[in-house]
Image 1 (cartoon, one colour):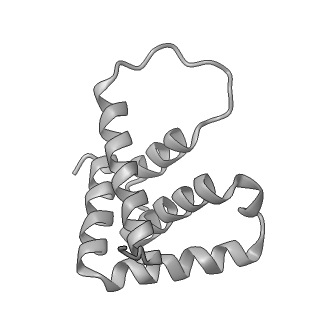
Image 2 (cartoon, rainbow, N blue to C red):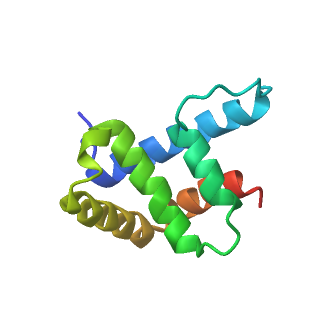
Length: 111
């Protein structure tokens, strides 16, 4: 039986996000409702901010993935920021994780 480490879980989540991003980009965008912005729309809005440092954008990606999996109610908790920072650090320590996160970020930013 193969054990999945927390780093593996994060990498799987990032791969899933990249695949979802590719699917969203391939679909036509219809008229927008007056509904609150989705996570996807918020990330795309952040991606459009050219002055945002790359690490801050990567942190926002990780934060979005974690909030999606753990629940939006945790985002307001100060400990959530610490967890986000720790997960980002773990991803960046791995060459594979860093490359995947950079690829996802580039996909959103159109690089």
